[in-house]
Length: 404
Picture (spheres, rainbow, N blue to C red):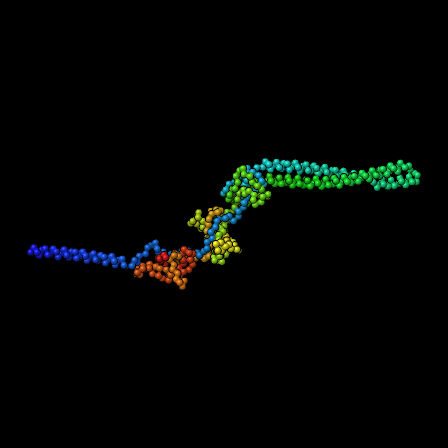
């Protein structure tokens, strides 16, 4: 009886071990099977969605915001800045005073010029008086009459009617009158030249006075336009040079601009410039207003391209109305020139599109029935902007696509 009990326990132990081994084998087999089974789930971050919305095909020109009208203000007079009436950002009107130069020396120059004008006018009047006197003197004694008197005296002397002394007196009177006339005529020429010279000196003095008065007026620098002060390039005490003397190298006082209309000028590749035309709509985006787009249009296309690094591009200007002044000068901006635009179309991320060798297009969609968990289907595309692609056929709104 005891032996049978011992054998029973051994058999039971053997079955337990055998069962454990079988269970372990089953678990291993299940693990291997699970490892070998295809994974049909796709990471959600690798999925896109077919959505409906607006889509535009465009080219982008990158540049800076520039005022449509910009003027560099320089002084017509040389001098020292005494006062600045406006600051950067101020709005100014045409004729409004921007700055004042020190007028002390300029006013002294006006007074000196006025004195010179008065002196030259006095000299001119004196020369005129001398000229008139010399003219009167030149018309003095009647020389022809005295000459006739001398001839008659000589005839009478020959006839013995008058003494020799009378003939000599007549001849002396004639010679003296003739000499006086010749001297007076010479004086007339000299005084006439003096009149002409003094007249030119008056004109020169008056021109100098006019210039001095203009310089005094130019010491008040006024705005040539309605606009905004973009920059103020001098401070009180700075010396400024005259643009009339130094031209373009004269001191820059201020820069003004009309920012009610601005533009962006950027480069467009030669492959795309043929699709751009004057009047074409565009949208401008700046860093300061990321969620806002400003509408504009193409207003100029450069007739000649520029080559850099073996790439030819053309300068294209896009103008924008800016009545609120939100767009400020020198802001970095992207001008999106609209080549084609559609509204309310189906679209998917461009990265989901597959291109075959024959240029046919397809996408992959999730499909749990396939070992790979995805299925390739053909689609027909419309326009694309490099980020989104229009779906013309092959997919429905709301479907998911696999991002490649």
